[in-house]
Image (cartoon, rainbow, N blue to C red; front, side, top):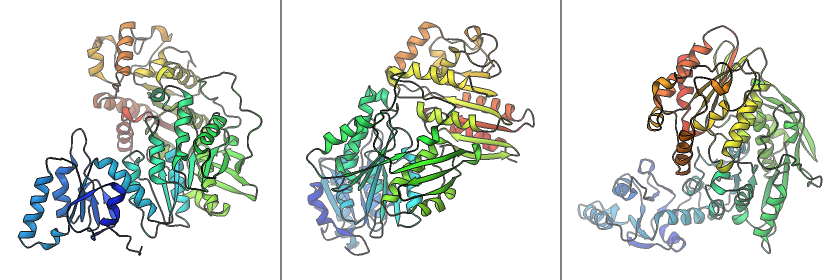
Length: 573
């Protein structure tokens, strides 16, 4: 293989079980894509078939832009049109189209995955697979930035972490790539196994196995078993990186042992960021066992923390420790979760050849993933924290802990939206979230979404000004709400059980909401409600000159980034 990183189509055909309908099997390709806008002169175009769009409609466009090959699904009605167009171009004298390869496959998505696995095996690159309930994207982003200081590194972009995104991430590998960081997400059992067997990681990392996805999988045991699937594609002699303080650690070890039984040897490394949570002002949301304690016979940590100092909106400072030494790390990223992510990323980085000094030097320059505790300064002593990409019990706890550690001279305003995919634990966890939040020294809380009606059902500090917003006016109308029932965003006064705005909903409405959630419908914050919420927040932050920090926290389904954008645009100075 030369530095050009190109491969003959004929070499690929056996790996995907494809049949050449047109073209020259000696034609070489160097990358692949599913979007004709990103085609170049070395591209193999893969037409995926979705509910609203069929990629076969863009094959001719991709070839016109220089694609040297494409897949077509067996029996697809456009095959004849594509082949006829190619022959017509050759007859018109455009002889380069004679070599363009049209490859018939049974299923274009499956063939994309098979090609990605084959493509990954053509390169001498180290692949690091990252999964986990919370922190996988943050850890992935940190690891890419750390490794890039010394190695040619590529990785998963944005949230391309599923059965389509992981193959596309692997398409970025070339002859110069030394490190490839791949994030792996899932919606059901078996999906991480597939992604691991596509990418064949040298290092497989599980950041943690908290309550995220329990609604989809049904139990906490199923969650950690699903994450354990990441070892299925681990290369011989590979390394598994685990969180020593994960309460499911021994279950994970058993699952990994069962999956790797009588197979290749592998190493395990453990990181321990528990020092970051020592003396935490917010206990974990209890979901299983009020008396749960980690066993005393935990394996020894390979990387751990000492002397952690939380600095609020200035980040944190701590000692990163190994058996060989320790180094002081200054991290400007916010929250205890960022410290844990750095510890996990450092563990993999050290295994791959980074030094403690490399990590300490790079840490102050690390940038968070978009919409994950991103800090913006809107004015003098006025800050916005954007954490609206996702929400789970663990990430909410981290966000609340951050607010708690910001200096009390700041008025603290929290916008908090529904947590999703919690299944039968949904009501319990939202009530625990509400109870914890309302007992923190916050100035205002804006609870968004039907699940956050839990704020109406618990008691808290009297000086917290609470607003509750259902979220979607069309839904309210369909469920029997009348505009005169309450005014939008009016603060609640008196006992929560009798407050005019956001009072506990009638039983019939709750039953309809529960039925809707079981059907899989998602309640979002519509544009009208989002605009009104933004207006309330702008009024609140401009009503006096006191230092303020506003945090916006919620799941993606609520699209709270609209509120963040309104605040960024409305308070520019």
